[in-house]
Image 1 (cartoon, one colour):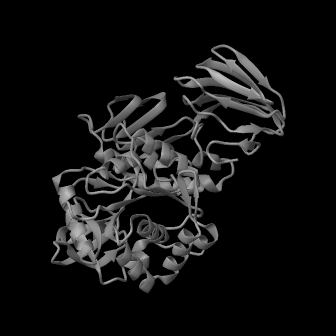
Image 2 (cartoon, one colour):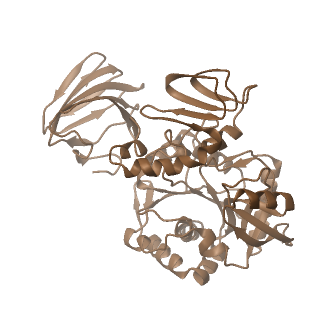
Image 3 (cartoon, rainbow, N blue to C red):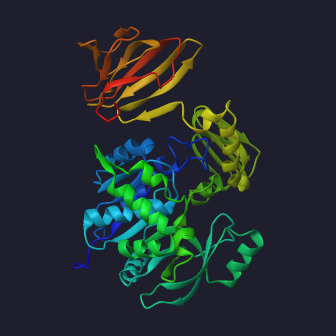
Length: 476
């Protein structure tokens, strides 16, 4: 393979954080969580493309996740070719079209792209790499290649692909794509064979995809391509131009191109794969005890079978139950039948529609920022108490507030505080008062994490009461 051009990975890292609620929220969806290992699903996806077959990855995400993407890549020491920011939510077809145009610009020629999700769990073995090589060969021959996972159960949560005759490259012709089936049809396809779960991963050349998309879904290519041409760099990110991208149809690559094209092939794979689309999927891939339970962190189980119990806060005791999912976060608890966990997404929709519970679907008590983050400890009518944590060498924006004053108490580490142009250094157990309207900044000049208690008082305590004057992260 020394003379072959490297594959350009395109990692899809959007999402709304609904299916693994309450741990997953809209501001921190499942790909940024550690669900099946020591690193997040997004980081696992990046590790899979560190192989010599690959060039540096392009990551597609949105503004809300841009610093999570950059930080988690930096934690792994992985350089990215680009972090492309979608200005509005669109489905996979416009995103992949934009990435194809950007890849042609960055890498030249007609690069082979590997489109992969950032939230899948995959066992990487020799079969995995053989499937990548087969897909690349087929893509170099002008095919749009998808990966079909050999089904092991009559799964109703996945779409299916019906495969036909082999191609010269070793892939299979695609007969049709099939929507998520009912249980009867899923069982029938499992017994008949020749049907595969649609993994949502693809390999093709950028030009082949753009040419097919231009013929079959021209609006997608026109508006996504214009959004790239009119896009602008922003720090380490690339922002697609909003007006053009918003005009692109909100459509998946399957509907827009693959179901209509006669150039589609599938590589059948038997390695372990899951899109982790529900809590029962997390249970299936995890190591279990003798009773079939998966229990993480603060959990005690007695007389319990085939259950998933996760808690990163309160200690949870489950006694005498089976087939249950108990998921405990800082501010919400989900309890339901593990076998019925596909319903979590619809539950989240109802919570989101109710003003009283909408915030529970959006943010955690702990919010992460590029400089560190904060946790809400206590809130009253005209006061709020937070725990702030600032990473070594990081600083918050130079800012002021119109409606609140603040009092900071250093718990650990060293704080460098600027108030109306005067800088002070505070250490453990020292404090400072920030009056209403003062221009201030907090920095951590030390080598350990800085932790503070912040007490806010005032008539309005919302996060939007921040006027940023200067910011290292382009938010001013």
